[in-house]
Amino acid sequence: MLLTACSGPLAMTPMLEEAESEFETVSQDSSVLVYAPVALVEAEEELERSRTLWEAKADRTLIDHHAYLAKQKAAIARETANLNKAQVEIERAEPERQRVLIDIRRDQAQRAEQRAEQALEEARHEREEAERARQRAEELAERVNELEAQQTERGLVLTLGDVLFDFDRAELQAGGQRAVAELARFLEEYPERNVMIEGFTDSVGSEEYNQNLSLRRANSVQQALINRGISSSRIGTVGYGVRYPVATNQTESGRQQNRRVEVIISDQSGSIPERRN
Amino acid sequence: MKVLKTALPILLFLTGACASTNPPTQQLTETETVIRQADQIGAGDYAPLEIRKARQKLEQARAAYNKEDYEEAARLAEQSKVDAELAQIKTLSGKAQLAVRELKESIRLLEEELRKRDGEN
Image 1: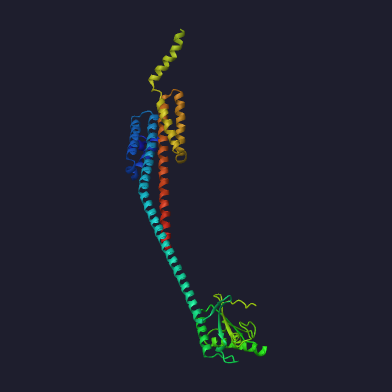
Image 2: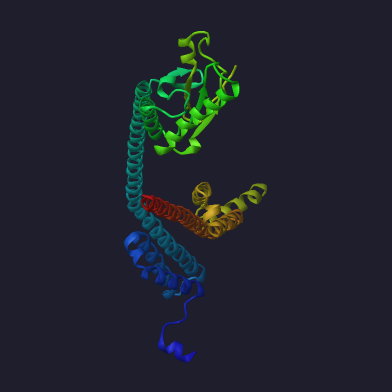
């Protein structure tokens, strides 16, 4: 007691001590000096008033009153600094946000451009595909023309006439070989297409003989195609004998038309409709 | 005699009033205004303790006023006002700091979005 009394002034009221300590803390905060200098000075003035009253040994109620005001004003200085600091940060951050937003928009624009480019590229690609398909169709028509095939309801039909075979035999003559070579080239070019080879005869001779001859001639054409590298799985054969005549068997020219081999070329799916009637 | 009986308390009252301060009517009104403003900006959420203290002190100031203790009433009104002022500034500061946090978060998210997109390309 004695020591404290000698070493320093009399003890302050607890409220004044509290105000002193609050002011001390706040005034040491550098951001308060920067962002709330006026509020800090107001707190200091109030604290000074309290101190003066205390030194003058004034009424304690009055000392504490100004000490309380000083304490609250110190707190106001602190909050004012926080407010002003936050507003400065907002002012700084807002342009940054705008900059990022612009970056994002630019990015979106680039993406949109890329998508448009891609769509154009796809459209171009489709056009080229269509053009190729058209050219292929044209080529097919041309090749069919070269084959001298007929467009029928069963598809393309190539007829190998009697003159292309030896008399009463299944072997192909040179002309027949040429026709088969042409057909093999066609089948090489259009690997999705298959063929059905059907043999026919006139009504001269026994039915069994004719049936046999028509099948052998069909098989002979098949063998010629296989020899030229066409897979046997793509070639069907059948002998119909005297059935399905295309002309009368009463005349020599009619019988000659009936002696024939027909090659039916499938559509793109490889299937050939069955012969009707 | 009758006149004296009624005049005396009035006289006493007047002298008493003169000896102390004037009734702090305007100060009370001002304090009420500051408290109302603090309430309006949302001090109830951002500075609930401060606004509560301001209101308590205003009540005490009114009680002192009614007891004609005008000095006490004036002091309490002044303290209530400074409490309410602190509540106001604390509310504004709290809102601004929240805005800063939200702004920074939104920037962070936007930048993250941008980085993610760059990663996709």
